[in-house]
Image (cartoon, rainbow, N blue to C red; front, side):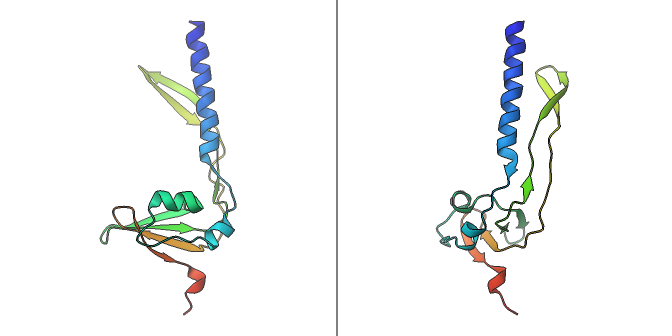
Length: 132
């Protein structure tokens, strides 16, 4: 019984640590986003994430099967997940989040990446370069 309790405590601690690390996107990437060299027609979503990180926002156009990723380069969300068990039903444990979430910035979009249905980069736009 003590081993099971210890194992559960370690699992909850590991989930809490992983949630804190995975939930944070507070890295300033403005230089890498502004100077990113992404090859249209070659780069994939995973290559873009490797180069400049996750986008601040995404959007889809289902009629044209295009996905848009919007980058600010600024920290968009600072959050962490701290699970607190609420209930158990069989093998399922229900948690609530005690962590801080959704501290958003109002940074302007500096890069828009467009992907086709297969996840290949089909276009990039920099709003600052588009003059009316």
